[in-house]
Figure (cartoon, helix red, strand yellow):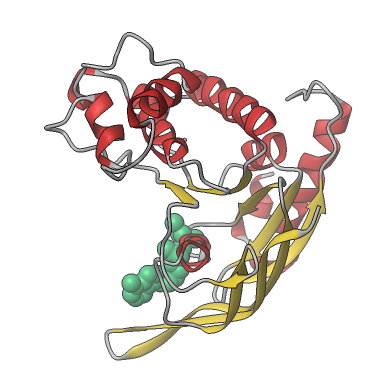
Length: 255
Ligand SMILES: Nc1ncnc2c1ncn2[C@@H]1O[C@H](COP(=O)(O)OP(=O)(O)O)[C@@H](O)[C@H]1O
Ligand SMILES: [Mg+2]
């Protein structure tokens, strides 16, 4: 498959209270179409900034980002976003939240809405309001809303970060099923090592201050993927080592 995303020498600085924060330094990453890439790093290492640059939400940076052969200059419907908070409009039903994200002139609008609700298993909840459904269900709606625009890439910023462990496992499996069925390229930002390994076919490890790419590990868990066992443990050890080696972490003593 060709590369759908090319990130070349991306640097990003913010000014914060008169001083400069170097959020990203010389990020280079190519993503093949249809891949599932997990980006992992500690809080503040620049994961969200990188995702916002890829998505066209942040345009003031050095370097270049090319998506589907074109420089990224703005958000577009072909790039779906899912954030940690679901960002649903509280005064609209589930169905209307999805409808709202689609252009009025969209062909087959109603069947697209029905299909995207079906894809995330929310049939029967079309007329519920966000406050009437759980956090996990709200994230499903947020995924459905992104999918309804038929994106070529889905950018997920810690989408399961605030969910309980069991709900999170269920949603991870559903996301994996959607990825297999729809073959949408996925970029998932997370600080959860197990999640990064289980979902990604490659895991990108970032370092903080400045945010750089420290390692890219290709993952092959076989089929069906398992969350336990020797293969998973080996990857976990590789990724753990990236975080808990050298004098870069006080947590090393707690392992
Ligand atoms: N809009 C902003 N203005 C100033 N500094 C920012 C802004 N957004 C992010 N930063 C800084 O850039 C760094 C990376 O932030 P972020 O991308 O949110 O990290 P992560 O998502 O990995 O937690 C942090 O030091 C953060 O304080
Ligand atoms: Mg973030």
